[in-house]
Amino acid sequence: MLAALLYGKEDLRLEQVDDPTPVEGEVIIRVGAATTCGTDLKVWRRGGHARMLKPPTLFGHEVAGEIVAIGEGITGWQVGDRVVANNSAPCMDCFFCKKEEYSLCHNLLFNNGTFAEYLKIPAAIVQHNLLPIPNGLPYELAAMTEPLACVLHGAARSQVKAGDRVVVLGDGAIGLMFVATLASGKEGWNSQQPTANNQQPFTEVFLFGGSDQRLQIGEKLGAAKTFNYKQIEDVSERVKQLTDGWGADVVIEATGVPSVWELAIACARPGATVNLFGGCPRDTTITVSTEQLHYSELTLKGVFHNTPNSVRAALNLLASCTIPFELLISGAQPLQNLAQVFEDMKQRRVVKVAIVPDVL
Ligand SMILES: [Zn+2]
Ligand SMILES: [Zn+2]
Image 1 (cartoon, rainbow, N blue to C red):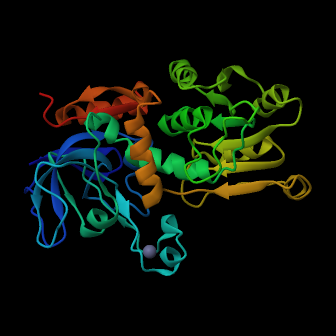
Image 2 (image 1 turned 45 degrees about the vertical axis):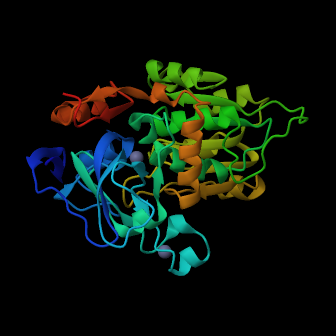
Protein backbone atom coordinates (compact mmCIF):
# COMPACT_ATOMS: atom_id res chain seq x y z
CA MET A 1 0.00 0.00 0.00
CA LEU A 2 0.96 3.65 -0.31
CA ALA A 3 1.82 5.24 3.04
CA ALA A 4 3.53 8.34 4.42
CA LEU A 5 6.57 7.80 6.63
CA LEU A 6 8.13 10.46 8.82
CA TYR A 7 11.93 10.21 8.81
CA GLY A 8 12.82 13.40 10.68
CA LYS A 9 12.48 17.16 10.62
CA GLU A 10 10.23 18.14 7.70
CA ASP A 11 11.13 14.83 6.09
CA LEU A 12 7.92 13.03 5.13
CA ARG A 13 8.11 10.47 2.30
CA LEU A 14 5.44 8.52 0.44
CA GLU A 15 6.50 4.90 0.08
CA GLN A 16 5.12 1.51 -0.87
CA VAL A 17 4.98 -0.66 2.24
CA ASP A 18 3.45 -4.06 2.96
CA ASP A 19 -0.31 -4.08 3.50
CA PRO A 20 -1.03 -4.57 7.20
CA THR A 21 -2.55 -7.88 8.32
CA PRO A 22 -4.40 -8.32 11.60
CA VAL A 23 -3.25 -10.60 14.41
CA GLU A 24 -5.51 -11.60 17.30
CA GLY A 25 -7.68 -8.74 18.53
CA GLU A 26 -6.75 -6.33 15.73
CA VAL A 27 -8.70 -4.95 12.79
CA ILE A 28 -7.56 -3.32 9.57
CA ILE A 29 -9.42 -0.36 8.14
CA ARG A 30 -9.33 1.17 4.70
CA VAL A 31 -8.79 4.86 5.37
CA GLY A 32 -11.84 6.87 4.30
CA ALA A 33 -10.44 10.19 5.46
CA ALA A 34 -7.51 11.22 7.64
CA THR A 35 -7.63 14.82 8.81
CA THR A 36 -4.46 16.82 9.36
CA CYS A 37 -3.88 18.39 12.73
CA GLY A 38 -1.77 21.08 14.39
CA THR A 39 0.02 18.29 16.25
CA ASP A 40 1.03 16.73 12.92
CA LEU A 41 2.52 20.05 11.85
CA LYS A 42 4.36 20.38 15.16
CA VAL A 43 5.72 16.82 15.00
CA TRP A 44 6.73 17.24 11.33
CA ARG A 45 8.62 20.46 12.13
CA ARG A 46 10.30 19.04 15.24
CA GLY A 47 11.00 15.65 13.66
CA GLY A 48 9.40 13.59 16.43
CA HIS A 49 7.19 13.53 19.53
CA ALA A 50 8.23 12.42 23.00
CA ARG A 51 5.10 10.31 23.59
CA MET A 52 3.41 9.64 20.30
CA LEU A 53 6.09 8.36 17.95
CA LYS A 54 9.75 7.88 17.05
CA PRO A 55 10.91 8.20 13.42
CA PRO A 56 11.10 6.52 11.03
CA THR A 57 7.43 5.77 11.44
CA LEU A 58 4.05 5.71 9.76
CA PHE A 59 2.43 9.08 10.32
CA GLY A 60 -0.94 10.76 10.97
CA HIS A 61 -3.45 10.11 13.76
CA GLU A 62 -7.00 11.34 12.98
CA VAL A 63 -8.99 8.83 10.99
CA ALA A 64 -12.29 7.33 9.92
CA GLY A 65 -12.71 4.42 7.55
CA GLU A 66 -14.15 1.03 6.80
CA ILE A 67 -13.18 -2.31 8.31
CA VAL A 68 -11.62 -4.58 5.68
CA ALA A 69 -10.07 -7.36 7.79
CA ILE A 70 -10.63 -8.75 11.26
CA GLY A 71 -8.25 -10.70 13.47
CA GLU A 72 -9.13 -13.71 15.59
CA GLY A 73 -11.15 -13.27 18.74
CA ILE A 74 -13.06 -10.18 17.58
CA THR A 75 -16.78 -10.05 18.20
CA GLY A 76 -19.21 -7.28 17.45
CA TRP A 77 -17.47 -5.98 14.32
CA GLN A 78 -17.84 -6.95 10.69
CA VAL A 79 -16.03 -6.27 7.44
CA GLY A 80 -17.72 -3.23 5.91
CA ASP A 81 -18.48 -1.45 9.20
CA ARG A 82 -17.77 2.29 9.09
CA VAL A 83 -15.69 3.24 12.10
CA VAL A 84 -13.75 5.92 13.91
CA ALA A 85 -10.58 4.75 15.62
CA ASN A 86 -9.13 7.03 18.28
CA ASN A 87 -5.33 7.35 18.07
CA SER A 88 -4.83 5.92 21.53
CA ALA A 89 -6.29 3.75 24.25
CA PRO A 90 -5.61 3.58 27.97
CA CYS A 91 -4.59 0.24 29.50
CA MET A 92 -7.45 0.24 32.05
CA ASP A 93 -5.15 -1.40 34.57
CA CYS A 94 -2.47 1.04 35.77
CA PHE A 95 -2.44 3.29 38.85
CA PHE A 96 -4.09 6.16 36.91
CA CYS A 97 -6.63 4.06 35.00
CA LYS A 98 -7.81 2.56 38.29
CA LYS A 99 -8.50 6.14 39.41
CA GLU A 100 -10.35 6.73 36.11
CA GLU A 101 -7.76 9.33 35.08
CA TYR A 102 -7.41 7.78 31.65
CA SER A 103 -5.55 10.64 29.93
CA LEU A 104 -2.75 10.06 32.44
CA CYS A 105 -2.54 6.33 31.71
CA HIS A 106 1.02 5.19 32.23
CA ASN A 107 0.78 2.76 29.31
CA LEU A 108 -1.19 4.93 26.90
CA LEU A 109 -0.85 3.18 23.56
CA PHE A 110 -0.58 5.46 20.51
CA ASN A 111 -1.39 4.42 16.96
CA ASN A 112 0.06 6.30 13.99
CA GLY A 113 -0.21 5.81 10.25
CA THR A 114 -3.48 7.33 9.06
CA PHE A 115 -1.83 8.96 6.02
CA ALA A 116 -1.96 5.66 4.19
CA GLU A 117 -4.39 3.48 2.28
CA TYR A 118 -4.87 1.07 5.19
CA LEU A 119 -4.35 1.29 8.93
CA LYS A 120 -3.93 -1.39 11.55
CA ILE A 121 -5.94 -0.81 14.75
CA PRO A 122 -4.22 -2.37 17.79
CA ALA A 123 -6.25 -4.57 20.14
CA ALA A 124 -6.42 -2.04 22.99
CA ILE A 125 -7.96 0.57 20.69
CA VAL A 126 -10.36 -1.99 19.21
CA GLN A 127 -11.47 -2.78 22.76
CA HIS A 128 -11.81 0.72 24.17
CA ASN A 129 -11.80 3.38 21.45
CA LEU A 130 -13.21 1.98 18.19
CA LEU A 131 -16.68 3.36 17.49
CA PRO A 132 -19.30 2.86 14.75
CA ILE A 133 -19.98 5.96 12.66
CA PRO A 134 -23.66 6.95 12.75
CA ASN A 135 -25.42 6.80 9.36
CA GLY A 136 -25.04 9.90 7.26
CA LEU A 137 -21.94 11.26 8.96
CA PRO A 138 -19.21 11.61 6.30
CA TYR A 139 -15.70 10.27 6.94
CA GLU A 140 -14.15 13.78 6.85
CA LEU A 141 -16.29 14.90 9.77
CA ALA A 142 -16.06 11.64 11.70
CA ALA A 143 -12.25 11.80 11.50
CA MET A 144 -12.36 14.92 13.69
CA THR A 145 -13.55 12.85 16.64
CA GLU A 146 -10.05 12.68 18.15
CA PRO A 147 -9.27 16.42 18.32
CA LEU A 148 -12.84 17.21 19.38
CA ALA A 149 -12.52 14.61 22.15
CA CYS A 150 -9.43 16.44 23.40
CA VAL A 151 -11.36 19.72 23.32
CA LEU A 152 -14.36 18.27 25.17
CA HIS A 153 -12.00 16.80 27.76
CA GLY A 154 -10.37 20.24 28.09
CA ALA A 155 -13.68 22.10 28.16
CA ALA A 156 -15.04 19.85 30.89
CA ARG A 157 -12.01 20.70 33.03
CA SER A 158 -12.33 24.44 32.52
CA GLN A 159 -15.19 25.04 34.97
CA VAL A 160 -17.14 27.25 32.55
CA LYS A 161 -20.48 28.42 33.91
CA ALA A 162 -23.45 29.96 32.10
CA GLY A 163 -22.89 33.69 31.72
CA ASP A 164 -19.10 33.40 31.85
CA ARG A 165 -16.85 35.44 29.63
CA VAL A 166 -14.24 33.16 28.11
CA VAL A 167 -11.09 34.17 26.27
CA VAL A 168 -9.60 31.72 23.75
CA LEU A 169 -6.03 32.44 22.68
CA GLY A 170 -5.20 30.75 19.37
CA ASP A 171 -7.16 30.36 16.13
CA GLY A 172 -5.94 26.91 15.10
CA ALA A 173 -8.41 24.05 14.74
CA ILE A 174 -8.26 23.37 18.50
CA GLY A 175 -8.90 27.02 19.46
CA LEU A 176 -11.79 27.14 16.98
CA MET A 177 -13.27 23.91 18.36
CA PHE A 178 -13.13 25.41 21.86
CA VAL A 179 -14.98 28.47 20.57
CA ALA A 180 -17.67 26.31 18.95
CA THR A 181 -18.31 24.05 21.92
CA LEU A 182 -18.15 26.73 24.61
CA ALA A 183 -20.28 29.26 22.66
CA SER A 184 -22.92 26.59 22.00
CA GLY A 185 -23.05 25.47 25.63
CA LYS A 186 -22.41 21.89 24.46
CA GLU A 187 -19.19 21.42 26.36
CA GLY A 188 -20.93 20.22 29.49
CA TRP A 189 -21.10 16.54 28.59
CA ASN A 190 -20.03 15.56 32.07
CA SER A 191 -20.67 18.75 33.99
CA GLN A 192 -23.70 20.86 34.68
CA GLN A 193 -25.79 21.74 31.64
CA PRO A 194 -27.48 25.14 31.42
CA THR A 195 -31.16 24.68 32.25
CA ALA A 196 -34.12 26.07 30.35
CA ASN A 197 -35.18 28.47 33.09
CA ASN A 198 -31.65 29.69 33.69
CA GLN A 199 -31.89 33.42 32.93
CA GLN A 200 -28.17 33.92 32.44
CA PRO A 201 -26.93 34.12 28.85
CA PHE A 202 -24.73 31.41 27.42
CA THR A 203 -21.01 31.74 27.56
CA GLU A 204 -19.60 34.74 25.71
CA VAL A 205 -16.41 33.77 23.90
CA PHE A 206 -13.71 36.21 22.77
CA LEU A 207 -11.25 34.74 20.29
CA PHE A 208 -7.73 36.11 19.73
CA GLY A 209 -5.73 34.88 16.74
CA GLY A 210 -3.42 35.94 13.97
CA SER A 211 -5.39 35.11 10.81
CA ASP A 212 -8.41 37.15 9.74
CA GLN A 213 -9.68 34.21 7.72
CA ARG A 214 -9.64 31.92 10.76
CA LEU A 215 -11.15 34.63 12.96
CA GLN A 216 -14.06 34.80 10.52
CA ILE A 217 -14.56 31.06 10.96
CA GLY A 218 -14.48 31.70 14.71
CA GLU A 219 -17.35 34.16 14.32
CA LYS A 220 -19.38 31.64 12.34
CA LEU A 221 -18.75 29.11 15.12
CA GLY A 222 -20.17 31.48 17.70
CA ALA A 223 -17.42 33.79 18.98
CA ALA A 224 -19.02 36.97 20.36
CA LYS A 225 -16.02 38.99 19.22
CA THR A 226 -12.73 38.18 17.50
CA PHE A 227 -9.44 40.05 17.55
CA ASN A 228 -6.29 39.92 15.44
CA TYR A 229 -3.57 40.12 18.11
CA LYS A 230 -1.18 41.64 15.56
CA GLN A 231 -3.31 44.78 15.65
CA ILE A 232 -3.49 44.95 19.45
CA GLU A 233 -0.75 46.45 21.56
CA ASP A 234 -1.69 44.83 24.86
CA VAL A 235 -3.98 41.79 24.69
CA SER A 236 -4.52 41.48 28.46
CA GLU A 237 -5.51 45.18 28.63
CA ARG A 238 -8.02 44.60 25.83
CA VAL A 239 -9.45 41.63 27.73
CA LYS A 240 -9.90 43.83 30.80
CA GLN A 241 -11.74 46.43 28.69
CA LEU A 242 -14.08 43.67 27.54
CA THR A 243 -14.77 42.45 31.07
CA ASP A 244 -15.51 45.57 33.16
CA GLY A 245 -11.87 45.78 34.16
CA TRP A 246 -11.71 42.35 35.81
CA GLY A 247 -10.33 39.91 33.25
CA ALA A 248 -11.89 36.76 31.86
CA ASP A 249 -13.72 34.16 33.98
CA VAL A 250 -12.00 31.40 32.02
CA VAL A 251 -9.00 31.57 29.69
CA ILE A 252 -8.14 28.81 27.21
CA GLU A 253 -4.59 28.76 25.84
CA ALA A 254 -4.49 26.92 22.51
CA THR A 255 -1.17 27.81 20.91
CA GLY A 256 1.53 25.84 22.79
CA VAL A 257 3.82 28.87 23.07
CA PRO A 258 5.27 29.56 26.56
CA SER A 259 4.89 33.36 26.26
CA VAL A 260 1.20 32.84 25.39
CA TRP A 261 0.81 30.66 28.50
CA GLU A 262 1.99 33.70 30.49
CA LEU A 263 -0.36 35.94 28.52
CA ALA A 264 -3.26 33.58 29.30
CA ILE A 265 -2.60 33.99 33.02
CA ALA A 266 -2.40 37.78 32.58
CA CYS A 267 -5.89 37.76 30.98
CA ALA A 268 -7.53 36.02 33.98
CA ARG A 269 -9.76 37.70 36.57
CA PRO A 270 -9.37 36.91 40.26
CA GLY A 271 -10.88 33.48 40.85
CA ALA A 272 -10.49 32.47 37.19
CA THR A 273 -9.57 29.11 35.72
CA VAL A 274 -6.77 29.16 33.15
CA ASN A 275 -6.63 26.10 30.89
CA LEU A 276 -3.07 25.73 29.58
CA PHE A 277 -4.04 23.40 26.75
CA GLY A 278 -1.42 23.88 24.04
CA GLY A 279 1.60 21.59 24.56
CA CYS A 280 4.84 23.62 24.53
CA PRO A 281 8.28 22.51 23.25
CA ARG A 282 10.26 20.25 25.62
CA ASP A 283 12.20 21.79 28.51
CA THR A 284 10.46 25.16 28.33
CA THR A 285 9.31 27.02 31.45
CA ILE A 286 7.06 29.97 32.29
CA THR A 287 7.09 32.58 35.04
CA VAL A 288 4.04 32.96 37.26
CA SER A 289 3.48 35.82 39.69
CA THR A 290 3.14 34.24 43.13
CA GLU A 291 1.18 37.27 44.23
CA GLN A 292 -1.40 36.92 41.45
CA LEU A 293 -1.67 33.17 41.90
CA HIS A 294 -2.17 33.43 45.65
CA TYR A 295 -4.21 36.60 46.22
CA SER A 296 -6.29 36.15 43.07
CA GLU A 297 -6.98 32.49 43.83
CA LEU A 298 -6.22 31.40 40.28
CA THR A 299 -6.70 27.85 39.12
CA LEU A 300 -4.06 26.89 36.55
CA LYS A 301 -4.88 23.66 34.74
CA GLY A 302 -2.74 21.60 32.44
CA VAL A 303 -4.96 19.42 30.27
CA PHE A 304 -3.72 16.64 28.02
CA HIS A 305 -5.32 14.41 25.39
CA ASN A 306 -8.69 12.67 25.75
CA THR A 307 -10.53 9.83 27.50
CA PRO A 308 -12.82 7.06 26.22
CA ASN A 309 -15.84 9.04 27.47
CA SER A 310 -14.82 12.21 25.67
CA VAL A 311 -14.18 10.23 22.47
CA ARG A 312 -17.78 8.97 22.56
CA ALA A 313 -19.12 12.43 23.40
CA ALA A 314 -17.17 13.93 20.50
CA LEU A 315 -18.54 11.51 17.92
CA ASN A 316 -22.07 12.10 19.25
CA LEU A 317 -21.61 15.86 18.99
CA LEU A 318 -20.31 15.59 15.42
CA ALA A 319 -23.21 13.32 14.47
CA SER A 320 -25.76 15.71 15.99
CA CYS A 321 -24.90 18.24 13.25
CA THR A 322 -25.66 21.08 15.67
CA ILE A 323 -22.32 22.81 15.09
CA PRO A 324 -20.92 23.44 11.57
CA PHE A 325 -17.57 21.72 12.20
CA GLU A 326 -17.18 21.31 8.42
CA LEU A 327 -15.98 24.95 8.43
CA LEU A 328 -12.68 23.64 9.85
CA ILE A 329 -11.97 21.51 6.77
CA SER A 330 -10.25 23.55 4.10
CA GLY A 331 -10.58 20.83 1.48
CA ALA A 332 -9.82 17.24 0.51
CA GLN A 333 -6.56 16.10 -1.06
CA PRO A 334 -5.14 12.77 -2.22
CA LEU A 335 -2.21 11.18 -0.39
CA GLN A 336 0.04 12.14 -3.29
CA ASN A 337 -0.35 15.83 -2.35
CA LEU A 338 0.59 15.36 1.31
CA ALA A 339 3.91 17.25 1.05
CA GLN A 340 2.14 20.27 -0.41
CA VAL A 341 -0.52 20.05 2.31
CA PHE A 342 2.14 20.27 5.02
CA GLU A 343 3.69 23.27 3.25
CA ASP A 344 0.22 24.89 3.22
CA MET A 345 -0.22 24.17 6.93
CA LYS A 346 3.19 25.68 7.67
CA GLN A 347 2.16 28.85 5.80
CA ARG A 348 -1.23 28.75 7.62
CA ARG A 349 -3.07 28.68 4.28
CA VAL A 350 -5.36 25.88 5.49
CA VAL A 351 -6.97 24.90 8.81
CA LYS A 352 -7.52 21.14 8.47
CA VAL A 353 -7.25 19.12 5.28
CA ALA A 354 -8.97 15.78 4.76
CA ILE A 355 -6.50 13.36 3.19
CA VAL A 356 -8.58 10.97 1.13
CA PRO A 357 -6.49 8.14 -0.34
CA ASP A 358 -8.87 7.34 -3.19
CA VAL A 359 -9.84 10.88 -4.19
CA LEU A 360 -7.96 10.56 -7.51
ZN1 LIG B 1 -4.93 15.68 16.25
ZN1 LIG C 1 -3.48 2.82 32.31
